[in-house]
Length: 341
Image (cartoon, rainbow, N blue to C red):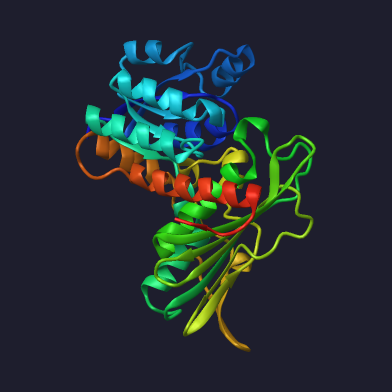
């Protein structure tokens, strides 16, 4: 198919490291330009993607012929930029958190449907190597019926900690943690949450407990200031449990080191054996080879959706479901008690 003319909005951490290299490496994408008004970031674009233009607005990007955009800007700008891009006739990928609350998420989803434009939240962590392994084990029935899902995004980076622009750890890490729980276990009946507020007033050391409609329970942790990060996943079922420790999926580190799917080829997303998890039943256990991480499939799948050749990689209504749970978690952490959805 003809490559989709893509623009990137924002060149901070997410735009620079999670979107630009993957967009540039995808044959299905023609990266047209970057929206940024920062002189420093324009210089970074020029150094890291020679010849790639920078522009000052979505309107300029649309006028240059863009068909789609990836939005990776501060969290409190996501909804306004998503809606403006849709009004300009652009298909949209929006980074997490897709919106600051469920109401804003619903408005964007409704606008995309009204305009007949593809829209997707950038839930790239669905394609983490370890989460893909969890899904494969569950789909194959090797755990039996899942009863408990424990998941952690824990790091020790207290300075600077969660960025103010990200809206705190619940929205930052929680967007991925909750999305993965919903993908694996389905809709939620009740939500309970705890958090610690830092000196900045932003939440950190977040814990969220979900009771799913199917009966399984999810326990989710997120922190920037955890000195002893726990296992990435412990997934328990009636036939056994799968445990995988840290560090987290290596695709982020690969991108930060300057690698891309184009440079690594079939080695992209592959985890070394020392980081593989184990399928356990009491004292018995076997090592389970970790599936390859496949962040490199997101933008090509979205480009295909723009060309009418398949669905978007993540349904935007999933972002509404995630935001609904996060709204309830915020109410629980603030006022205490269990929130029933």
